[in-house]
Image (cartoon, rainbow, N blue to C red; front, side, top):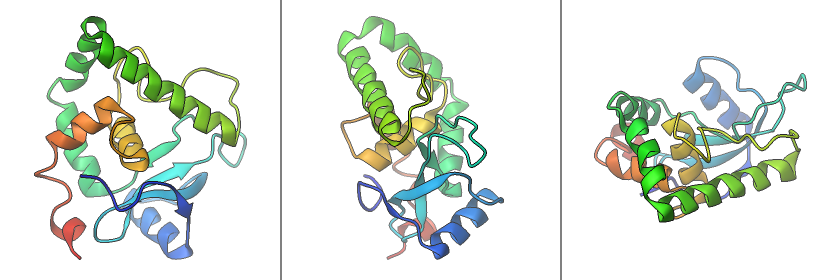
Length: 168
């Protein structure tokens, strides 16, 4: 299960308006819509590596869908991120996949504009500290890129997309 379409597309004014409504503020440094809910509204945006004033903004993919964010926030309250981080120390294949996700994220962000740092987002590659980042990355890039994003999406599949998110 993922949003409609892997790969960013330019942002229309109508998308900017929806994202502003979703966030409760004007979006910052938005480059593109990276994934949409089945109902067509933006679920994930791609952002520039720097805000308009030059401040570094390392989160390349940002979840904007309130229903998605609510489901992911609920997951975060369960201690899942601690368990995921602990698994990194014992599962070499998982750690390698997570490192590849970090490297891919970093390369993509740096291609847009280097921040001069190896820091990406969500705790990559040594820990898991924000599932929203991982879910956004997984939706933007598709299955198989971010193992923890894929896992979180699987865990919320009965909660998202639902309702307006699942409308045709």
